[in-house]
Length: 165
Image (cartoon, rainbow, N blue to C red; front, side, top):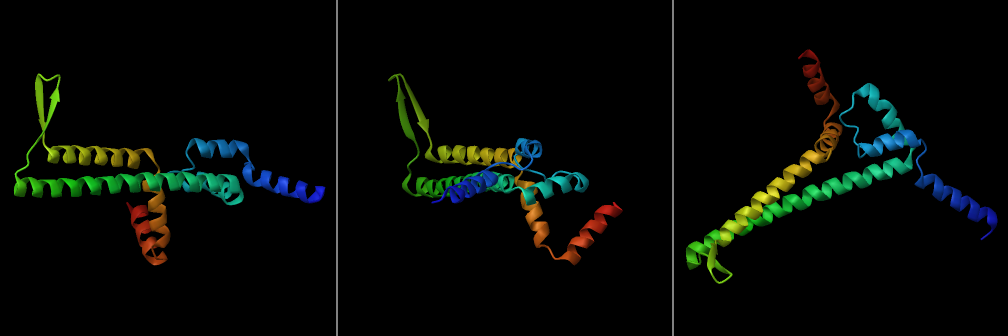
């Protein structure tokens, strides 16, 4: 390759990997690229920056992908523990298996129901799901997606009701 082609390729790569306005990029990254809670007046500049800056737009997409993956894994974990609790409950009733005995220091025997373990796993997974939903801007992000998919006439009715209240 010629020097000019290498130089063009390097400058093109740097342009896409650096933010066009570092101050705005730092503010957006501090919020994990969540602008859903901002007022429309404040949001304009950030929307424009995200439209213009490929670096920040890509980082926002990565952050939203991670949020969606976390909530998906938490949801699947809840479903798995719920299914396990139901199956173990049915098996315990049918086969009369009740407990697993753990010997600790040969002095104490702890009886743990497999169903209880599944229920604890279910509760822990539900707690993690709740923490992910609170800690990430996913509810606002999903709300924006739903609002974009609602037909304009229905969306106008909702905004008129909110303005009247």
